[in-house]
Length: 257
Image 1: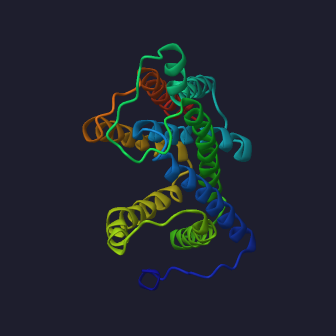
Image 2: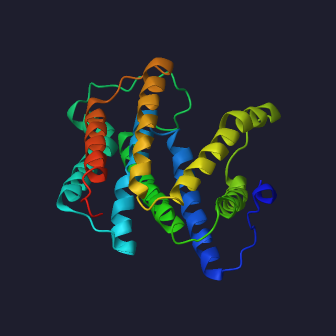
């Protein structure tokens, strides 16, 4: 593809390379927590916490790039943070105030049902999302094409994956790997390709991430109809507040911005 379109693939600028490495490292940290969250949190909660990345993008853009946040956006960020707190603590609140509310699920691969551990991990996951947001903002400083950005990210995934491999038991068969390539690997590559391409064409990185809320809807569909899970009403209230907060943050920019 690079030869076809005449895209350069050499890294001549050390400063750009440092930004690429920083971005890839932040994305890798997020990916580790994101993958682990699938075995600790229900899918809707996973994607809701992941969507708080939009709020972190605005905050980091303000700190690093001096992108102004108006009063309406500040309200949106505050609402989103309150929603994130409810979402991450929904299980713990239900456990202490509604002890008779049991978690029912057909998903057999959760590694814990302890509300305290779930809450603590949720905060760690949110820190990982903040790392992802930093990586997204840094993308604008790395004046590189889509190939170099993806190449560096892929190398980081392989390197960090190799370092962590001895600490995890591998139960995958060759057929599992083949299925994973077609159901996970290739779709992610296509998604990354279009997403990074869009990042390099716009300054308003927050708007792009509003589309991430589609994953929450899909998560609820899988959670309810595939695994027969009953949504936690406290966490669901947090989901609604996160949506409102992100919407107000993104679509309340001043005209001159």
